[in-house]
Image (tube, rainbow, N blue to C red):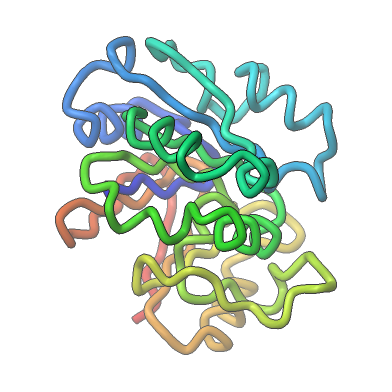
Length: 216
């Protein structure tokens, strides 16, 4: 897949330009599916509604897509792959909300979406916070929200971890990011809400109008 891993959505013109570059066409000519599954355990139904309808202050679903649908991962096992896999393959982009990363990871595996990802060569994945972190190898103990999560391991689609919302007090300070990176003990990025990580054809590029740091 082509990836745009953000902290707070398509927050500025640089991130929007990176999205259009990954799509290879204007947003207005692209079809999207939004995945709000991670929102429900933490934000509740109102937050999910704001994300889906584009009423959230974090720009994702309200960017002017040609078409927009909802892909609810918890429903997919009861629908059957013969129904939902074509929906995913026909979409140009998947817009994945933030929230509980380990819950999202569980349902990506349970639904079968995680197994489908390697075959989606031309699809763009746009993650927001947890929607980005779920593709990393580990998220760190501080970001594990669900009590049922066995550990902090996630899907490992990319080989680096992400500390989002850098600079938001009191928890997401640079000192906190440094402690987190020491726990992760692998390649990692701390990114603020004006920053995204673009991944295409194995190349990793930081797109930022804000602040970020790479931990080797």
